Amino acid sequence: MSDVLFVTWDGGGNVPPAVALAHELVGRGHSVRFLGHPTQTATLAATGLDVVPSHHLRPFDSARDYSALRMLGTFADRGTGRDLLGAVADRPADLVVVDALAFGAMDAARRAGLRYAVLEHMYDAAYRSGILGGPMGLNLRLRRLAPRAALDAAAVRVLTTLPELDPTSAPNLRQVGPVVDWSPRVGAEPTVVISLSTFGYGGMARVLQRLVDATEGLDARVLVSTGPVVSPDDLRDRPGVEVHRWLPHAEVLPDASVLVTHGGHGSTMAALAHDVPVLVVPLDPKSDHRVMGRSIQAAGAGATISPKAAPAQLRAALAALLADGPHRGAAARLGAAIRATDAVAAGADALEAAIRDGAGAPGRRAARP
Image (tube, rainbow, N blue to C red; front, top):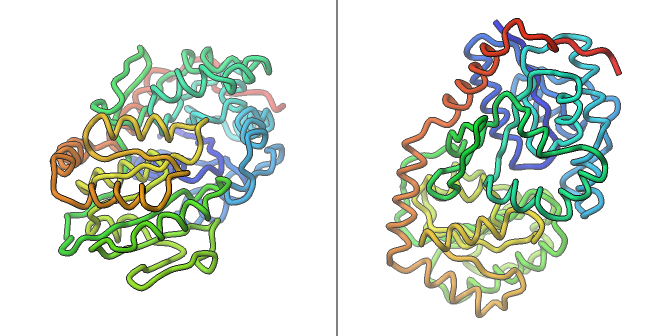
């Protein structure tokens, strides 16, 4: 069978879709390797995947290294491309699957003539028009990384979004649906799940505290997942609120009535897959959080609110989503659409097609950098 190299980075929600696709390819008989930040090695290896040592990647830890400059440096890191070329020189790959934000790796693959795919784990509307159309895209072009040319040259772009929320098309684009796990609903009592990012966004502890304060007086069970960045000890809790460091979505969403999230694609789609309305509290104006929030609100499946909102405003938004109303039907409609897809199988099919189309093509090998 074929050899596939995945190139990722320590960004949290970008990793599970890549891991799911990798395991699907392994199950189909392909050989799969991963290249990513050292902070990811143990987690990736624990899933049974082979990990390629990195030698040139710029150090990055999503739990503590968030800043505009650090993010730009990570996305534009040419060291990722050097490690990619080194890995392919050591062991040729039939296909390289590059994370959509690893522009240094994407550029290296394009210039070396490798056959590569791009894994897009966010709305295409936020990606091409927002991220690449804004200051980050300009900076990437000034660094001569040509992100749009790299996207256009990809054998396939696997987009893990729902067409109803992110309508888009391109000649090399395959929109397969969200990669999420889901379980049948169980919920018997009103339950609010508050789960912001595993990423180290500034001020996240203050936002979490306001959300906890906002739940006072609500007739609902409240579950809070602080994630790796914020310690549960940093929050002033109150009776009726359960604060945990980590609450797997697969365990709590079947019981949830509302999910409060920062607007990450993975967590938002996981909520909808369980027919759960969403309150989006965007934490980063430069990412896809606001686009996500607007799309959920436009679809009628939830609401979006400023992270600076006072507890009283947050409480009103939560109370509205806890109540019965058309937002529950809208979330259930989108949930049915998500559950009707088999994103992992469709994504693996698209990658296998890219391998078959490139069989025997030049450029499979790259010289060591």
